[in-house]
Image 1 (cartoon, rainbow, N blue to C red):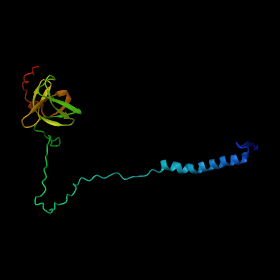
Image 2: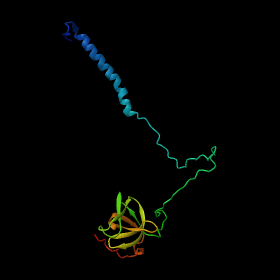
Image 3: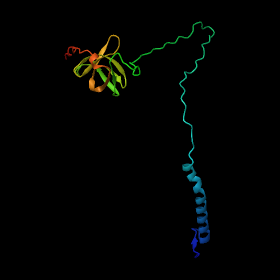
Image 4: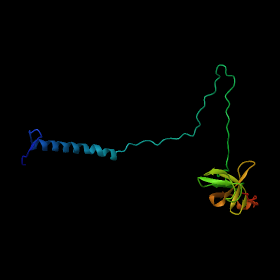
Length: 170
């Protein structure tokens, strides 16, 4: 191997043997570190999947506070949709399939939108007119949805044909 001399910027000579020694040492360290780097991909860390508990959290029993003679009041409101698991559905219903579905006052786009239903919401069907379902919104209100925008479940023969309400005047 030929010896090549280099000059440092302030004029000092540095032997090429020292330079090649530093390079060899760096390569040796790199080769020794290589197996350590590849161990990350060949030995993954295994983590147990999360567990989900369906038990309701235990609520502490209310305790009386000084000067407080009333027990805390709790209210619960429950709204149900027709069950898909019941085997036989006695009442025909529709389920919205789009993210948002317009519910109108009558069976046409010229009627006012009275509600916008979120996706996967079920409504009982009470009537039909052309390409529209009349649905029950609550005990005293109905609305209309366009048939191609919803999924119907039940017996279509059980749904009564109903007349359209009068068209709105401008």
